[in-house]
Length: 489
Ligand code: BES
Ligand code: ZN
Ligand code: ZN
Image (tube, rainbow, N blue to C red; front, side, top):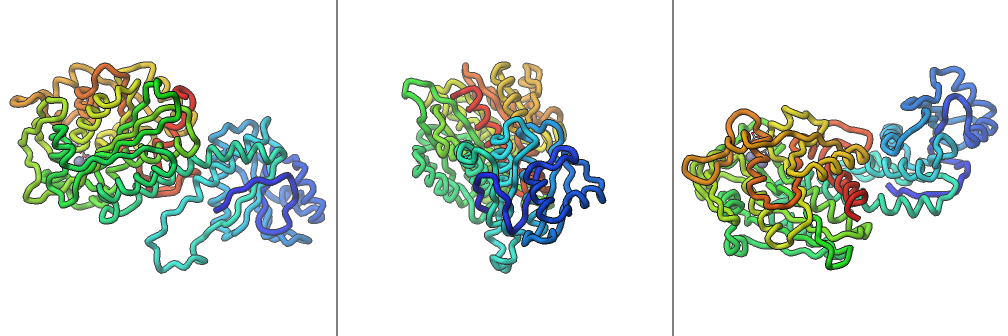
């Protein structure tokens, strides 16, 4: 779908969308009403449409025009950016259902800042129009419902175009994450994932990839143990975006990249195991974020790091009971091979601090099933050693619509991962599973503001939301782009 902006006008064909506040016709709506001999007013009179938010009214094949339809949408009183994005997404859903190929949206009333409203609607439409259908080979191109052109008419179209351009880069980042998360695990595994990320070099991102030999030299026994039962080589991807002066300390993002999580020798039950292809959602978000930041040339120094492993149960696999030594020097008793994400993150977090001395670190991971029990699919769990960073992330969650909820941490939880024979164990028992996982990570954090986002409930969705079609959601990209815009640039 191509999104474009144009000056106010009255399109003559395709589908037209007009926003209305209450029952008063906007200039464009009144013009179409004249053109159609009063069809619009008559339709409104014959319906329950009152121009409230979330209401719409379709006028099919309006007389005396070549239009396929006019869709009136209620703008309500005061719509914020998120509501306007949702409206854009809802328009796409409606128009795809109606098999429209060309959609024009006229923004001429309803907001103080019409240009911003137009931009937000366009952004939402773009986010919703995403498709992952490359493996649907039986559907021919013209059988896939597809809007080709989405044109937004607004006064001040060139400013709208410029403002949208930066958001479109964020959408590109979101789509990169969605693509990575949706790819099947026979196609996307550590080496191929790293290969995809190397393509960001074209945008000016520096990408380094460490293989198993290099990681062994660094002493990353914790990460390597997870991948040792797989035929596929583990990788550590290190990305750098330098958008500010070299003297500025970087902000770092770290991701869990388990390209498939069978559980290892602590094998998961068969039902639903296929979902574990998206156990790399944290790494996917970090990759998408780097793409967004480089795309819009963010004025900040950013490090993106993720460990990529496949957690498989072959004859060489790690056993429950094994003790491994992490890069930090701390030893870990691996009592459940399915609690592997924290083992990967431990070495990635340590490496990040040693190598880059970041001013803050945020990690993202589909870490625990328990966070779904706590927060469902509405909020990611936030765990942090820093109140200021937590507040900023929560605020960015509210403005971006990718919400997070802070969870408690503390010594009582930390004790639960003490091991009898090693420095710690990788499980903390039945209760507070997301918290003991976070406490484990905290043991690999030195004196630096750190936040961990448990996104197990957020990386994937089975149902459509206005700006997020079902499948890989791209969760985290919009949140962290917002965080960087508001607090780091
Ligand atoms: N990848 C899973 C977490 C997960 C579960 C994500 C369900 C999304 C949906 C993680 O590696 C895992 O298996 N965690 C275990 C930890 C337990 C063994 C301590 C879990 O949550 O059950
Ligand atoms: Zn697991
Ligand atoms: Zn996992």
